[in-house]
Image (tube, rainbow, N blue to C red; front, side, top):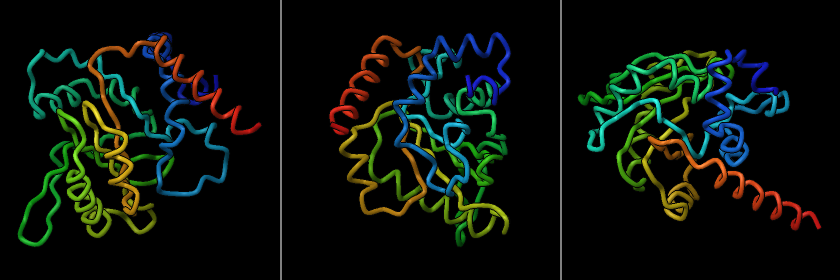
Amino acid sequence: MKLSIKENYSKRELDRQITSAYYERYLLSEGNALPTTNKTIDEDDYPDTRILDFYSLEFLDLPKEYSESDLKNAIVKNLKDFILEVGKDFTFIGDEYRVQVGNHDLFIDLLFFNRELSCLVAFELKLGEFKAEYLGKMNLYLEALDRDVKKKNENPSVGVILCSSKDKNIVEYSLSKNMSQTLISEYKLKLIDKKLLENKLNEMKKILENNEE
């Protein structure tokens, strides 16, 4: 209800969020709060301050075989639906956004600005499983953004590496001693089984209840 009120969903948008199990995915992603700024108000009132573990990109309608460029272009073509999925506080800046480091031109797949958090958010798109070396490249992007693009009144930039799959242990080890402002999320091109997410949510609640005891 809080999400619907804040986001001012239309009937079509609300139906899509229910169908895609956005609520369940949001609760299961409670460890993925953006690491950029302390909230002065309860985060539950600001759904856009959390990066989801799982994104549903069923609206892209991609073929069985596709490239990273196809994925990026499909997101740009369906930008309204993508922003509905990641959060309406995200404002699109551009794709293949160029930053320069030394004599090298680097290109960020997708660059957004998050109005609530007042920070740049860079999305890097990957077709396969997350690899630890992706983090170094994203850190370079974020440093370039913070030095040359970020305005003085804005918070440090945040990175999101969006992969088709990830090994939780690889992610944990990669981030354990890293001060990076980067989060790793999965995307699916088909709607995620809502019943499966509900079961995972119930398991998480039981674990929390047992820990409290």
